[in-house]
Image (cartoon, rainbow, N blue to C red; front, side):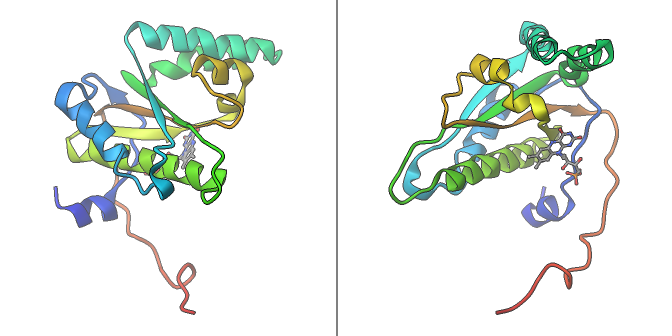
Length: 182
Ligand SMILES: Cc1cc2nc3c(=O)[nH]c(=O)nc-3n(C[C@H](O)[C@H](O)[C@H](O)COP(=O)(O)O)c2cc1C
């Protein structure tokens, strides 16, 4: 796929099924992530793959977090089902370090760039995905399960798999409102 075409046409896909990226395709996704811009070469990211039985464990984790929040049955069911929307989920943690020249926010942005690169690499190889987050990314039980230290942030969960629908192409949009010259 042409690189510019990929950039201009990228869409998220929420209906995803097997197969998920594996082997070389999955390695390519992580290598793309690690080419994200990274001030100070801090590599401020960690990737945790959830698939197979891991999806069930993730479902139980989300359910526990909602339960700890006093959520009702509807919220519990939503949390339980959430992980089964894709055959694979990658949790992306911004693994941050106090640094004299690189503030924490820059490190979180780098981790976000890594997520974008991963989605792009997935699409380039015929897969699809969607970056999701939600309030549970900040829940203590969830943070602990993914090894977050105080200075870390879960920047999202990248749901990956094979698209079950073809995303609608969209026009890039009018630039005037968003672009200025200094
Ligand atoms: C940090 C971040 C968190 C997001 N969290 C969610 C989410 O929890 N649920 C959701 O449906 N979309 C979420 N999105 C938006 C989708 O990833 C996606 O961009 C959106 O559905 C628009 O589709 P498009 O990427 O095809 O333009 C999030 C995006 C970002 C950047």
